[in-house]
Length: 545
Ligand code: HEM
View 1 (cartoon, rainbow, N blue to C red):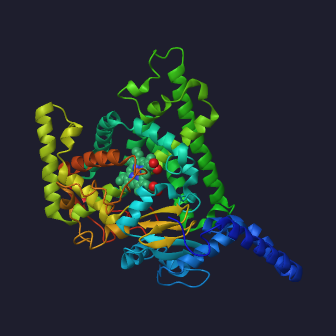
View 2: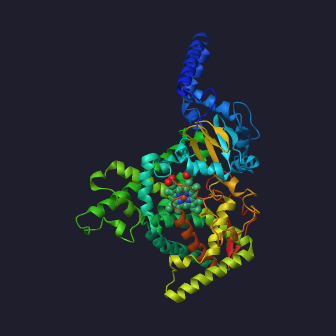
View 3: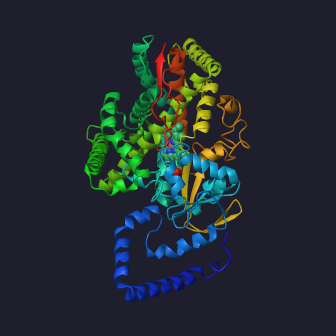
């Protein structure tokens, strides 16, 4: 769709004309107010990195910025707007408080749904959307017009994500997505059942030690380590010991700093002790991952390797690294391929563990709070595992048999709705468009309030209640109606969703059939206000019987 009004025809000419005027004005100002102008110029140059993070990339963007201001001022505006600084005050008050930033986006967007709502974060022009129709347009029918917002939302995480799948665009994304979807084909999911079973067995040993003693355990952290072990073994065949050694010392502190930088962006520019420690850890993690890639490549191409050793796609027990490396021709392998693979592997680590851990802990917490629902889940787990043991003489049920854990899967999906562990997803509008009947100018940041959609009473009956049955025996999430978005929908949906739900049902079923959890702290259940994915604020503590 094209825009109407003074900017619609010969738009570039108009901008060029306006830009020239702005430049002339700036030169005139420089001549008259030399000292002040020079100070402003120096400040603009010095603050350029910060400006570009918050929305103004350089003087050439000024016209686009004014145009967004002009058009977006016609939209419904979220409360608390102050000229020039926009919604900075209510949003900064929400950092570390209740309602938190994501709650505000959800309230603002649902109050005006289906219309998008205007929000200005410092100088950045945004619209928040919580309606399936415009969301479908952004994620699917007009996806080409909505790029990943790497310089804003993902910026603090670029040390991990680099140019991996989550942040890539265009041809590079298509190539990577094709390669990785192939690597995540069905067989790897069979392996995930065994990998997750081994990981939950290790957790069970820990829980067995404190059973009946009244000693507490913080399960959110245990799930974090467990999901790291699973993803570490599925991608890189890391042993649990190696995972427990490398991840908490290198990877987790990097993630913590990245999370802090998303709300305190200046940390990325302050050359203090923490800054250098972070830099050093990133360097070490990169070196570690590249070493693993190199070792695997050498092994595959060594003289002693079996003739079809590099044909890993045909090896049912190859890990994801094997499968991705199998696609790389010998002539292309080099430092650039290693760097790209390193980014892809780190992307998998990031995308694949904290989200899954959050889903596991919220599901456990909700089931513990609702004994009648816990009973249904526990009985289902016992039944499915007992039937499988009888039939297979084998402890681990097949993937088909695990489909019988319908209620547990319903509980996992429901916790993803209720807690919306990824509460917002952002995109950059690359060309003028209409969303929910409103004109959205090029350059606007579109914030999809996933939490807003998930909590809309008109879309979800008793939206604030945990009700796993919503997802039992129907395809609410598969209908493509864009009201259930934990993994988003459309061509850029989550590549790991089947892996995540499979791993989680194995973990939940094994824990529920063996243990009874009792909440042991008042603070249990509070949500973290600063981090995505949404995790518990002070962990969740249980005693075990
Ligand atoms: C409950 C668990 C999970 C949730 C809630 C979740 C959620 C999401 C969301 C919301 C996105 C879209 C992000 C965006 O477009 O900005 C995404 C993308 C992605 N996820 Fe997941 N995820 C989960 C588990 C996993 C796992 C286990 C893996 C890896 C094995 C994974 C790999 C990816 C990848 C590679 C992408 C990027 C896809 C692309 O851009 O083409 N995720 N995920």
